[in-house]
Image (cartoon, rainbow, N blue to C red; front, side, top):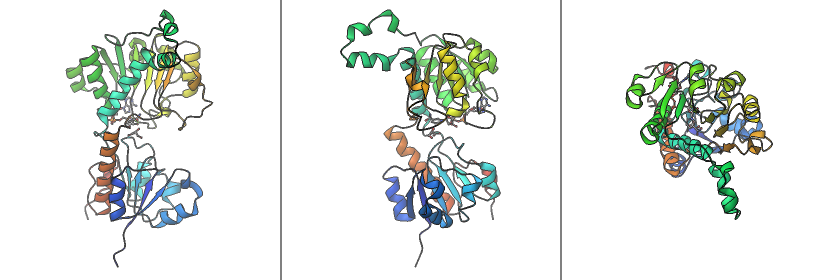
Length: 328
Ligand SMILES: NC(=O)c1ccc[n+]([C@@H]2O[C@H](COP(=O)([O-])OP(=O)(O)OC[C@H]3O[C@@H](n4cnc5c(N)ncnc54)[C@H](O)[C@@H]3O)[C@@H](O)[C@H]2O)c1
Ligand SMILES: O=C(O)[C@H](O)CO
């Protein structure tokens, strides 16, 4: 009898993609808490050929326990959960889901910027508590977004989609810092390339949207917050660990910056005792940049396509370690 290949769905994958995978493969769903010592997880992992999901810890200690693994298909564009060198060494493919989420994340970055600047969550509470009159006071007025300077750190797919919205929709001046200059962004959004220090000094809004790598880990800390304007509003939609969170808390407490809008945290789910959650000038979201019904579906479908290709001996469209692919 033909044996179905074993596949782990890690954390979750949306329907109807899950049902389709269950038809084709021997699927088992595991959650983050299982990754460490659940004997059922460890025994299934021994025989697993493919993993699909969110944030599977693709590091050597887990890979040692997965001798048959061929592919880890992330349902995310970020792949900081994967040790790509280690995967390549072991001939394991890693894939991600770029492009399909770009506009959704950029919409959310603009939403965070607007809601932080115009204090929307705070005002929402006043209205719902019947305190309309108390809400309409100069102390609770926000600041303008339009015609201000937006500094984008990481002018990639999402960075450019943010620049498009901010420049064409809100008449913002775009400053940016990236590994290399992006002539297309300069042409389309009149964006100005700057070193990090100049960007931090000159921006009214700073939006961080780089991947998390060895280079970007902690790239915004005490020194960087001190360079920002006291009126600056800081938005992080990248990964929590691109920022030194303790330094962000200090900068907000000491009024070195005005406010922050955050979708990501060093620890997720964020610890309820985290001081950021107690600050009125911080708008928080639970890492939902790409989480709309439409985009979740597109990401799940693309990740399943990558998984199928990898398990059928074809080259997946979104390899994050392309050097692993060798034609026989
Ligand atoms: N909050 C969310 O829900 C959410 C959703 C999607 C993506 N993300 C994050 O956004 C990241 C970017 O996604 P993308 O599709 O735009 O990726 P991308 O690869 O198209 O763009 C990343 C950009 O960052 C730049 N960069 C890399 N290292 C840098 C450094 N050291 N200094 C300055 N710039 C640097 C690159 O040059 C590139 O232009 C993802 O890796 C992920 O971590 C978060
Ligand atoms: O990287 C991404 O796609 C999102 O942050 C979901 O993890």
